[in-house]
Image 1 (cartoon, rainbow, N blue to C red):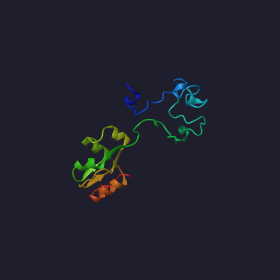
Image 2 (spheres, one colour; image 1 turned 45 degrees about the horizontal axis):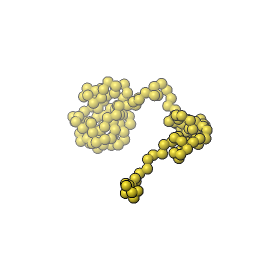
Image 3 (cartoon, rainbow, N blue to C red; image 1 turned 135 degrees about the horizontal axis):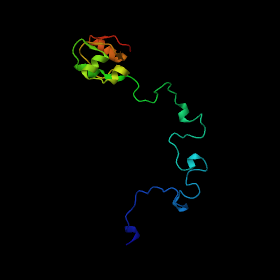
Image 4 (cartoon, rainbow, N blue to C red; image 1 turned 135 degrees about the vertical axis):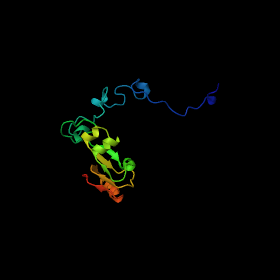
Length: 149
């Protein structure tokens, strides 16, 4: 077999770090620089350096109060399109939405907020929190909004 008849290899294999001087990334530091936390074993995900005042964790604003780490502490979100099946002049309150099965018991505790997503054609009387865009669509359909925005 001639050397000219060997198949050509297009892609190179990935460089293996820390496998001897001949590997190209071996020897004393293996491409990690000299000393420091990043030159050693495992580095935490949010590590940005030694200065605590400049770290990412210190830049994030604090959320005060009890239960700040609990997910879903805000109101239960309902899209405007989900209210399209309700009858004309229906009173939209948390209790009535619970009876219809649109929210769970959790919605009574956390509250309900209606967001703009879809459209409605019937007039509704809304007594829960509503965004401005959803309130505009409800009043355009002939309904009234009595809840706080």
